[in-house]
Image 1: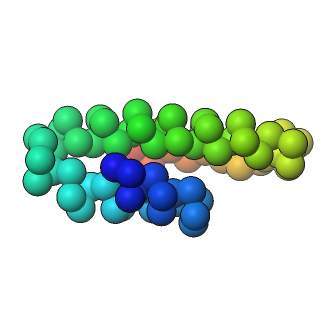
Image 2: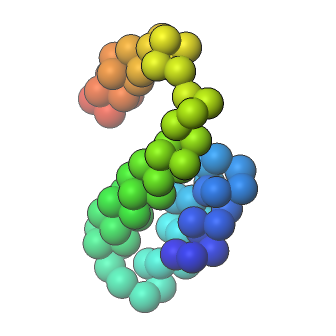
Length: 77
């Protein structure tokens, strides 16, 4: 997980890709997915906290709205 967190910190994405390739070798796949989701939320929250001075909710609003609409649609369809 440390290597996956490093990839996330450097590139801004990719933690799940790196972690899902190795973690199911150690634990069950469903448990690995849940663990990666929680850990990814933690790392992303820390990244946002560290970069909060450069973050603008006004600029992020269209992305957040798109995610709120698009993620459930993508999940169900």
